[in-house]
Image (cartoon, rainbow, N blue to C red; front, top):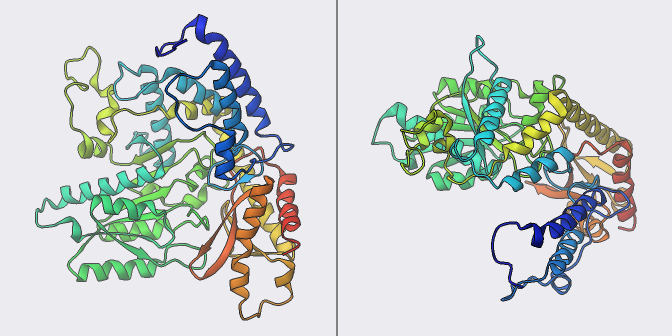
Amino acid sequence: MSDWQSIPCVERHKQFLEKLIAALIDCTFESVSRENPVLRWREPGRLQDIINFNLQEEPQSQDSLLEIASKVFKYSVKTGHPYFMNQLFSGLDPYGLAGQWLTDALNSSVYTYEVAPVITLIERTVIRKLLSMFYKEENGTMIGDGLFCPGGSFGNGIAINLARFSFRKKTQSSKIISLNLVLFTSEDAHYSTLKWANVCDVEVVLVKTDEYGRMDIGDLRAKILREKSKGNYPFSVTATAGTTVLGAFDPLIEIADICQEHDMWLHVDAAWGGGLIFSKKHSALLRGIQRADSILFNPHKLLAVPQQCSLLLSKHESIFKEAHSKQAPYLFQKDKFYSTDLDVGDKYLQCGRRPDVLKFWFMWQAKGTSGFEKHVNHLMTLSALFKEEIEKRHAFKLVTDSCFINVCFWFIPPSLRVSNSLYNYNNLLNKVAPKLKEKMTKRGSLMISYQPLREKPNFFRFVIQNSGVDKQDIYYVFDELENLGESM
């Protein structure tokens, strides 16, 4: 029977949805069980035999759809599994998941109050709360504004556009072309800055980092002066609070001083490290962030909010409207029956926009600010334990000291433990991590990422966002790596 109408019908769909929801609930708990694998690896050709990915002319039955859903779950990576430590996101928070399901049931879009009244007020509440945390309140007065972004990369791009807009507004000079505008960021900064600089037609100068991955202040000063001597216009610095690989925090206070001296926009990419703002114990790593003109923060990273949830905050209250507003008359009419200040969509680059705030707000309601603080502190404790274990075990070696979640290390197989003076030692070590990654992935026992960094051979990067992980899981990671690598 053809079932083409896009509206739920009790007779045709209730039983199907009940079965699917029951299966999803079972999947939720199966996916985080240590008794089950992180993934069931299959080569692409084998997966295509298991799941028919082709699209059909005629509709599939509901039983077939339930079978498809079961296979999709079975052969997908379980990112909520305690042994999934592969990316800067992980975990499967039950309240976040509930908020996600609620979001999908509403199928809303956030641009006008009339279409999304509840979500609009939730979004305003969360943005104001985060502004008060990152920028503090000066004399009790609320400062700044913010918006939700479809990911941190997009947020970094908006920040570049805001910086460019602000510079042009200040100079009011038509003689300054985009090619004269220069942005500075560290060589370890997220690659999205380079991509968006191409979109915004500005040049990027990469600043050297020290041994810990922090931006070199002396090199930043020298390169700003060099660009000025060429007749170019340094207009912005993108600093990072928690780099992707090493987890480094750029010296924000010193960078802010330089930006103030040269009248430059300071953007802080705190996509990864921004969650520390919830921890009284560890928020000192963010010292100076309140001086930033804009701040990127991804709750879906350190706070383990479900994908995706990303915000861009700015201390300049009207900057988003000034830079983006086009007042489309078919959406943002001036003669509405309610206050048009509630129609937030015009300050966004997008039109249709998923309400990513709902799951974050729902989690916040369930845990409270204190719950997020306990979550962050737990992760930092586990990270410190991981580092201590590396220093105890002769098969492991730190790449560099760390101050955050990231712990970067080499696994040294038995064949390389005798001597590191072999003429091709680094070449041999470079092959270890990829081979171990293949073994753990095909076995489904663990997922942890590796990468090279400049002259350093491939190394592993331990990161964690899942506060369901415990000390025994940390010991498991070491034991599993040793088991997999013992024959190498």
